[in-house]
Image 1 (tube, rainbow, N blue to C red):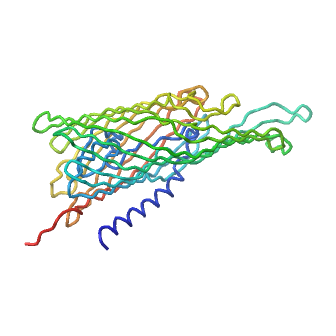
Image 2 (cartoon, rainbow, N blue to C red):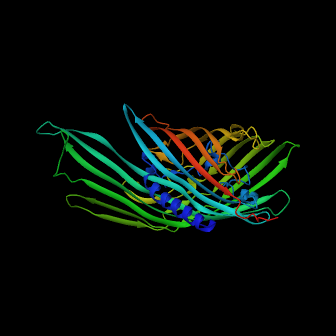
Length: 436
């Protein structure tokens, strides 16, 4: 089997896994808001470093968070990078607690060099995931004649998500400055439902006029992210790279539909809103320091202008698209990597050891309160895959602890443990062999 058939098989297999795994990407009740839970877009090489990436450039791996890094792709390489996450999550509110399990395909990304200083990539990556099903009950009082307890329950459910397919280029037009861009197409859908039921002493009241509400939408639009990197040589052993990114915000030309009706007759409401969604403008700035091909460390700050974005919502029983209940999101990530000796004959000295942490503010409000803040600690390894030809391919393994802590004690606290596995195939497909 030649290399092109191998690539096709790998691509089809990972694309199939991606499509199936994303349907089980979330159980979080907070994915009810906005476009759902946002993907962190980190990859195998930096998940163990808290997702820090904007200043990182390395010819043996792909860094989709800053497309300027593509200009560093090695001239002889074809790189295929895939990643998957296994998650165990605990959701706690008051005295109640529940555990869930999820598996998601994180990304599929491939790239190679087109010309000196010009790299090209393409791939899939999730933008957000939606998946939840929970209920809350309310006490109405006692029945006026029987004295039985009357309650009603609202059940909230939803599923869907947004995905992105993209192509990217990175160019090194001058001695040090590199620029790049990812040109993406995003698409997805979601259905969100609220079902209201009445109970008498815990038994459903069939004669009650229960309320049903549903919001659904199909989304599609373009997405463009621009990046730049500039390495500064501090001395013989140290390089400081400055990285910056800019994501173009714009309106999404997609329609949101709302349906409301009562089970025993009554009014039926149908409303559609065109251009109901916005994509936020984003900014990012990062620094990465490398020392003697052993130590690498960095810090990133990213900011998304969600406070300027319209989203469809039900406010005071009215379906509308508005910026209300959304706010700007800021994320800070720090992390580093240590590789004792990449050229050593001893395997453990070629392993990359990683640590990191991150913090992010929410982009939505819940019942007038700020949503949960996200805290994360990570650790991981980059394990060389050694063969007789080269040892540039790697298996990246990382562990994440993520806590979503709300501002109000009445909201749900989430704690997640994640195992991330990424495989980077880095083969010298473009080497010209010579026979002496």
